[in-house]
Length: 93
Image (cartoon, rainbow, N blue to C red; front, side, top):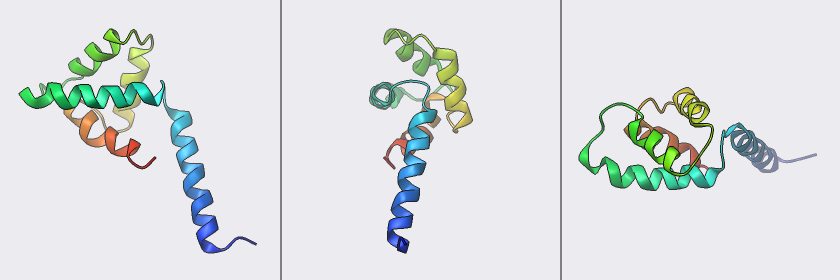
């Protein structure tokens, strides 16, 4: 029988696995996106996903609309929210 700590670790591992499986593209693309947005948003956010779309296109990602939908579903409705809300999800890894 597992103790409380083992059960908690198992649950957290399972949650992390589910999160990673939900990603519409490689997590490395997201990490690069966060770095890109961090630099580009110094000039402010226009409350669209324009910078995100520009980045994904430059990386030759072929499912940009799917990724944008995933971002919106997880609280990233514009570039600054992608950085504020989505990057936070990856820090739990």
